[in-house]
Length: 387
Image 1 (cartoon, helix red, strand yellow):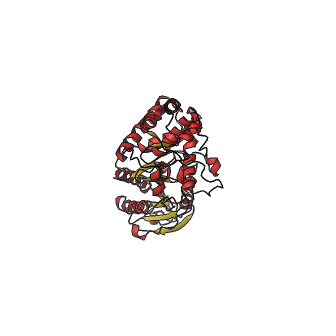
Image 2 (image 1 turned 90 degrees about the vertical axis):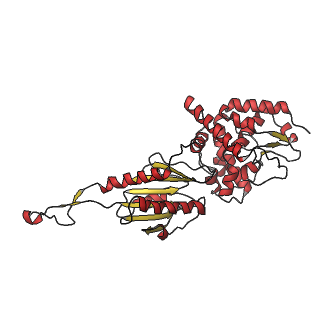
Image 3 (image 1 turned 60 degrees about the vertical axis):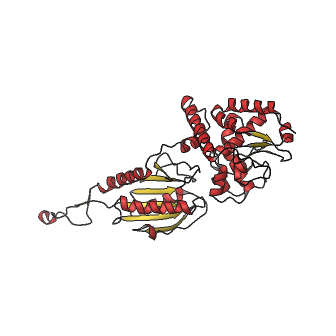
């Protein structure tokens, strides 16, 4: 059997009319026919494989919805992200990836009927990422649609066409991200939130994050170290001349810095090593070896609190879900209260709505082609990525 090429062409036109900023991606994905797969899927080379019998049962609009859905799996690197966190339950990851995508597709009425999962169907809140959904308890329904290796990274028997090279895919991702950003600037509110977040993360201007992070830390520490206040904890040098009046002395506070280190399951060994390296660099660059520095290992709760002068002294524990809000709350309970909190995380975490009563610098660690999570608006954010 062969594919209905008129339907495929009509589906492309519908898809690009609905989301014109994805046009390059939709037209770059080649469609080929393979019988008896029972699905329409995409592989890691951006080739869409369609079972002619399945395609014959749906109309051009539904085919267009599926094209947008499948291309979104490829754009967001769901296959690589599955490998990065060691996904074992492929079917559950497929549904989690579907929910991340469909959260945006519903804005333009483009959620496919065959893969309809949304965050609420998984018992999760909207506007999250597949990694966060995957960490939630698995719901009873099994996989209802196989989106292919372009979603979970596991090759299928019907795949084999090499498709686009990794370099071609990266160029296409960057071009599509630029189109998304341009559309959002031209017509604010026209691009779904999650898709715009992906584009902004992919095209973050590349600055030397080491300099940026060091500058933020030095500024925060200097602003506290430069504060001079009166205290009665030690006698004034002029006290004898004013006896019996007790005079206060001047006090220059020594800054306390708290580092909240994400040790959740999504932070694999390489990310944790880089986080520890930043703790060591923080001590050196900011001149904090003689000051107090506390390190908190946090996933959904605080597992360890250490006072350190070297990154080798840091105790990391955890490995579960992620809630940096718990780490920030614990940091604010430290005595004395820290004047600066540095959070090192991959960003896949909920954040408090209100800023804590301290300066906060968030270092978002980006690994390979993965998509980092968002940082709170009230914090100064530095993107830490591979050279």
